[in-house]
Length: 440
Image 1 (cartoon, rainbow, N blue to C red):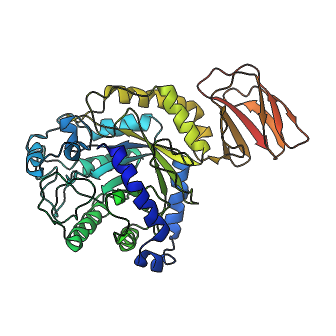
Image 2 (image 1 turned 90 degrees about the vertical axis):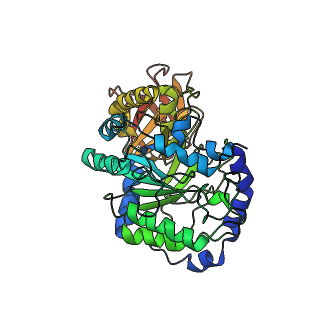
Image 3 (image 1 turned 120 degrees about the horizontal axis):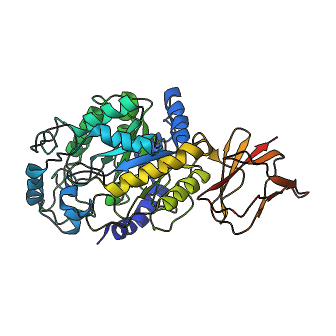
């Protein structure tokens, strides 16, 4: 069964959990009060608008995506042997961060430990990590975090709530064929292990922008993840660190951002969303090609135009875009991904002002495009329009209209019904034809 089918199987149970909740969560739901640092970090997160997701682990060696271990029922003892051959000789944190910064992205979310159970950092709580179990012997998270701090990019950490290798993780919907003993599971021990690793991540690597959890959908609806106490630990260690959880439901107490997978808020084309949109900062994650982890056959990269449209549409829906790349086993980012990053950065160098620091605009998304707003400036992003006229159902009074990129005046008429009719200089043919309106 592939990832999407597994997710859809778990979705009904997850929605039930969101509706009912466990007793501890219900009791403590009023207790979380974000600090001033946390609220400021939420605003900065929304201002950043664009981040890059990096799925990198032992699975990259198999070049078949990050779910290969469970999809092919690989015994954990055999899978573990991959570590002895993992030597990403071309990994260069400075090159990674520089290429990502060139795209205009403001933060990186890196997989510290995915479902395979391999820790991509130096941890005292498991020998199954990149420093102790591989000939490479380097803490790539330390190198990446240091370089992010140096270049002014925020670092976020993905962390899996489930594990296909450890005996102490209770049996879930996935990882059933990886050779663990029947009836395995020691939740208190596994919970302590996770919290110890999270403490390391939030103590040894400088300021962390967010912890991005994944895996709640692996357990039954009545499973108590003890998330509230875990979230409190994170906020105690770094009050400004945001917490998001890819559980495909509305946010739980203690979470600071809401995540949507492969869909923008309000959409459910991938079958993984459909949850109500909260008042928290929003983020949608999407792949640059088809997979999250590196898959050698997957060269189906979205065009730069498609990626820019996805970024603009996401901003128009008041959310951030977290765009994924699966690094190669040798430590390099795929050349096609680096090319897309460069081209997106060239576009952002011109139009970034209409994305960074904005919120979803006064004009709701339409088939022709979206709007973003910053102060009294409303940016109309025209992505697909076969005409030189555009009606905007806008109630606010417009005092000026111009083409954003060169300041060319736009003729407009304020309609009696409150709308605004724009007469464009031409039929738009750019990737994104941006009109800037000044509102009274």
